[in-house]
Length: 335
Image (cartoon, rainbow, N blue to C red; front, side):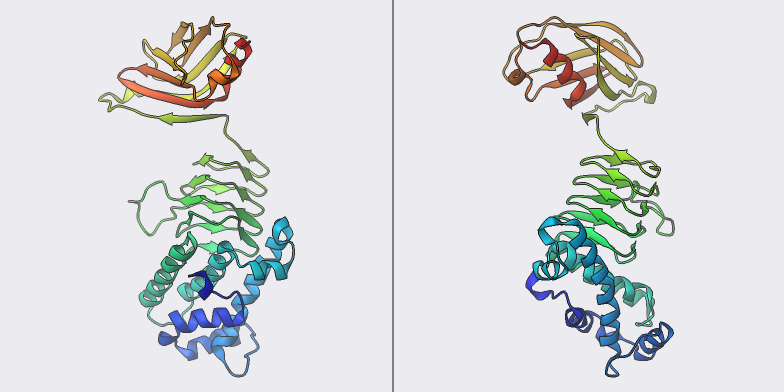
């Protein structure tokens, strides 16, 4: 339960005592503190380590206060104690135990860190693998259904919203290779976005809601969606027949161009929820595009709510939903 988490030095001390203290090697912990020139508080090594972790959390707190109008002071961030902040604090605690030899048995310490973060995921809805590397000043806003995979690297001043997945494209790949993205500095990833595979997201990148990113993104870029596509395919025996749609764009005032590949003698169906019909015909097609011309003059904008465009070709079926290009063209025909 969230009430069991306290964002403070003592709160972190309790986490360590409850989950890791039983297995601690105090000599190794002391060596770490001395090596890092840490002032040992009252000869209490665990309290001193808790203070180090809390200092890192306070950098996150300051960053949150600078971004979130609803939590615009450090005290308010600490009082609000959101799920995102709790998950970040727990991650910063777990990851130091994952990597440092405070517990000599490597397999044991990594197992304990993973089990701890599994419980945090249940309590907060934020699933961060303790192996992931997250730099200072990190903010998860509206934390829910967040996944950050094991080999993810995240730079400074990054901000994630709800339902973001930083994942792998292939769950069967070797554990010894990097499978998850590298996020550089000053990156914002909005709700519902998926960033998948060993790719690099450059500095100062903004990824819009629901985007699916599987390729490198250069610095100073905004990633957005023009068309939302939902694909429903039947099984194909010939790979060359695979039907793919890239998007739907307006062409002239009363035509659309459907862009893709694998078209052969295609059929286009346009369905409205209110059972109205649209008068249209395919005027041209080749393997990469289809031109559809409309003749209707009696549509209203309400008729276009929930419209579906369905393309059939080579025993494949693709359904296009919420197409900006289709809606824009049909709106031009509305009364």
